[in-house]
Image (cartoon, rainbow, N blue to C red):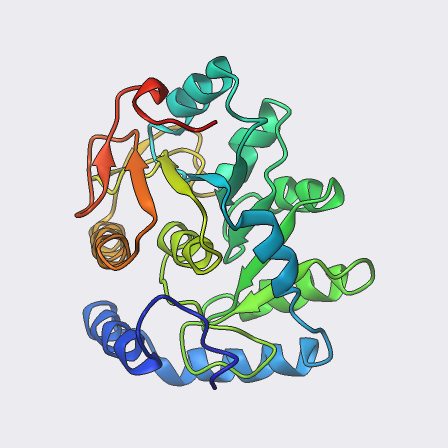
Length: 267
């Protein structure tokens, strides 16, 4: 357990308390999450997670984490016009990968539970992106197909879970792709983090789900998930020394909102 739970949460018990609260709110079947983790272990038990690679990539660097919220395109345009995209580490939460690929940008890291645009994720992986692939009770079928394909080539991916991990499957904490991307990034001690397209509001962005063609009002269940993500990000931000900024209007606790990049020294 010690080498499988890698998180800025103080202990697995702290994360487990949060997870149990999520289970109660959303009616998640913990047994299916545990079964999914065991099944994933059988597929990747021989693959050693390349944590040193991520440490050398992120430690002391500035990082932008892209969520798939409705402000994503606006924030990508802002970052692109500022010339920042080629100076920082880019972490894409699932569907945000497609928005980056569409403008010719390949993120360094993709954090996904495989319900975004898989073509964009596969393309990014083929161009060098490293993946954190999340397994849970609702994505077993797509996970097994996806992992079988990845195992045929290079193995620049790490599998994560939200229940008790079985090494080399890791648990960093986090529930949605966005807050899990933040939890993962913080472990490797970046200099600063900026959120782009991380909105936590009542509108979901068109890049958040494969079948969406425009921004839409979130379902009640999605609103609950976004409130959970907001709370997890707030807990993480208040328990790290890494300064975190957001370009969005919805601001988690201990995160500073900025209107432009001149407010943050990123050189």
